[in-house]
Length: 331
Image (cartoon, rainbow, N blue to C red; front, side, top):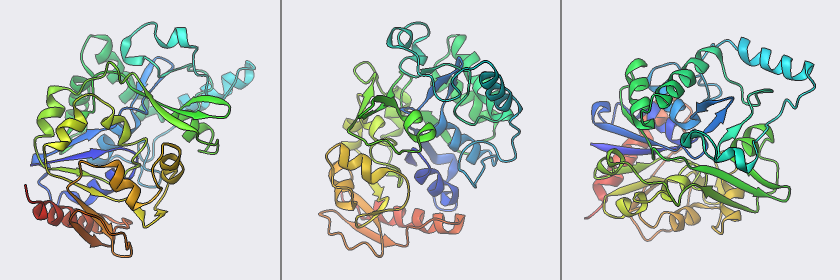
């Protein structure tokens, strides 16, 4: 039995080759929901859906987003209508009073639907419609994702980090910005001053997540701040990680990040942007998997391998290193 904490693309890339190492029937994936958005009334769960589409052999592996070969007729028409009506075709984050009005699952995530700033394919949209319909029936996010897992024939158990809404907000010189605005609409270009997770005062880990965290845990090479950070901010998760064997894969080689804005984000929240900084951010991690070129000395067991994951075979190699690191943990 093993549980993988997943966000962004780093952990899904690891999962792509992990089935040859970890039995998929005995693998649970706990996915970040801090960058979810309520777009035009539909709940979009990017990190959850990347795992679902990967497991269902539907993922666009070029972008690690959405369904391969999906059409975009609805998205294109929304863009056309917004332009013709003189509306903003970029992200329109609703005002604070609208963020806390209406269904709780959409809190701090609400964007207007016109001028859809995230590219959502037509089949992809059917997933969001189904999930949102289940939520409106009164089902939990965990229950809704469980139905989608079955529908897509995903081999792993997939759990959201919480059934409660959490929103990752990036503080910039121009004011607070939802992570999807920062990442998608603004190409991660604004200066990052800080990161906050709205909703964590009321967010709790579900019993399903806490049960999954009783098993050994692998933290994939995801962004420590915006992919794993929201999970650690949810009540119960950090505490559970302290009590179970945990191995983490660094997304850095020394102070060079593989991809994305992890370095800038870590520096903004007070961590050194490096493998050493990741170790500081993950005090619960009992062991690490580092790239063979990474010379960082850590005070915990380390397994080194080539951590670049261009193919599923590469991912299997990293998964085997994770298994070796778990076996090195003395608890």
